Length: 132
Image (cartoon, rainbow, N blue to C red; front, side, top):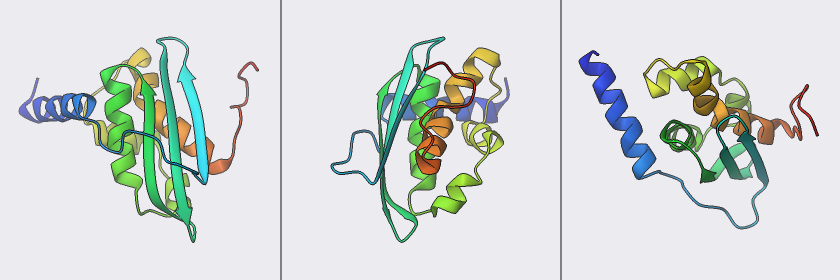
């Protein structure tokens, strides 16, 4: 393991133990919840939006260190950005933020926050192909 991977792992653990932007917002303009049924991770993201820009963002839920750290890091990253900028975020952006390679199972954990955030921003109630 390289020194930079060690630093990223430390940052992930720090965000998992002491998440930033953790909690809920009263009267959010956008709120969305999603889960990863394979591992039991559950996530809710609340947004206050003004003039198309994220003014405040919080997340709540339970999950593994990867899902919680990714949510914490993503919330910090997108606060102040426009909804259009959020719509352009990709899985590669989140993976770069995390800075470590994730296998197929952990990849779903790492991307749950992005999936939840984008679904809220787009107003999606269910991803195509998911059961009711």
